[in-house]
Amino acid sequence: MEQNKPNLIIVMTDQQRADLRKACGYELDTMPFLDEWGCGGVDFEKAYTPNPTCLPARVSMFTGRYSQSHQARTNHNEKDALYTKDLLDILKENGYRTALCGKNHSHHPMEDFDFWETSGHLGYEGERNTTPEEFAFADFLKATKHMETHTPSPGGVEVQHPYRNVSSAFKFIDSVKDQPFFAWVSFAEPHNPYQVPEPYFDLFPPEILPPVHSGKEILPEKGEKFVWTRGIWEQVLGEQIEDRILRARSNYHGMLRLIDDQFKRLILGLRERNLEENTIVIFLSDHGDFVGEYGLIRKGPDLPDILSHIPMVWRGPGIAAQGRTSSGFVNLVDVLPTICDLLGVEIPFGCQGKSILPLLQGGTVPAGEFDSTLSESGFSGLYWNNDDALTVSDEDACSKEMDRFDCLNTWTQCGQIRSLWKGDFRIQMDMMGNGYLYDLKHDPFELRNLWNEQAYAQIKGELLAELTAAILRAVDPLPAPHFRYRTKVHPKGYWFQEDYRSPDPGIRDYAFLGGKLPPREK
Image (cartoon, rainbow, N blue to C red; front, top):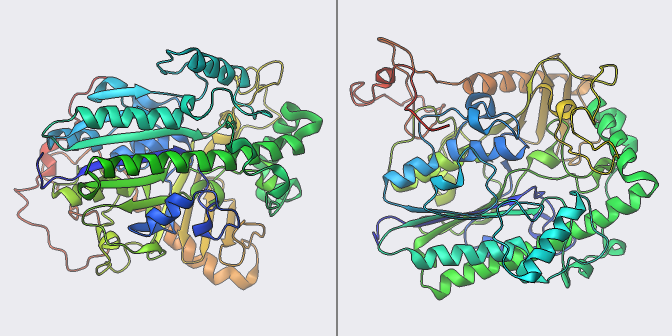
């Protein structure tokens, strides 16, 4: 194996809320191994997704580009992904064997990886079910229709996807000879259906869960999308809605511990194979989950902190042991440029993230670079509402029987919304000028909108200017200018290095691209 190239593993969970860990101040100990393991690396307190939606977030991680730029703005636009090179391209060019172990839901067909064993949410989404227990579990998942379960899942731990995903990772790792490897270990959990087997089903029973910080009474203050989403949930979950949400919360907590145990199994497996010292492991999620807050579950409306805030932990060679740190805002779009920086290769043109290597190494942090972060939502157009003729069953957001609900739909994803986090505040604005301002230090669950409060007028003005500037920095550099114009790009993706001077323009002549992307199979 090439000793100068570390192995790389990205462990991605699906829909994991950032704050439900003891290391984050939560009163229940849901993920003890991750908390302890993170002390040997960097466990970011201020990590965010560029879009709290599965596919857009995953494409952003691979390409280092915001969803407005890579154009895969919904869960169904993978064929529209626009970029020059992404993480998979870079790693293959540098001699890495690559693997997908688990949920995909990106712009890459599984065949783009050298090895793949996939899984989804409902049992028959790429899983290689071979035993009676696995088929029984798959049937169980399919029957849930993505809803919560009120009995333990059948088959025990070994039929669960996180267990099988880790087994797939070991199968891949053991097959690699004399090459560095990259494994995307992508858990489809704790995403719904909210299910979990024994002993995890009874590990965090409903009666010991901390109460939520607010219920449905706050929804009018949050906006029409929130009110509409709760209304659909009331139709789907019926009179038992509060009890069903509580059971979903309980299962969600149990699944966090199951994931933690399987992550531990993965790390111990690396140690047993003498690979840990030369392997960079990144633990992160694509976006969060309401988990009962505001009387909601799953995701959907807008860019609340609870959906946009994600776990992100880095550990491995070249990364200093700093434990839990709040030294800067980081984002999924920063993963690609940081890996390029670690490998000493050029960041692809069109990448909009920046290298967070200074934060990982505990060195001097470039002034201004990690003071804020941006997230976005929306596919286009006007807001849809109940006055329109389109119905949830016509759009297939719900079945005609109203026994299932896809919280990502025409209503929750329409329009254009942008949000910026800086210091203790989050500001959000939509294309119609509607705004929200929250003081996260004193109001972490965003129960009081400060937008129209005179005492915060100066802060609002300053953050609006910051939001505008961040949106402009996120304008797509693709296509590259034609003819003579050359785009000046910092090699680490930075913006505030006033003393930066571009090297010989002949070395990095982006105009040569002519605004055209290399041909790719769609």
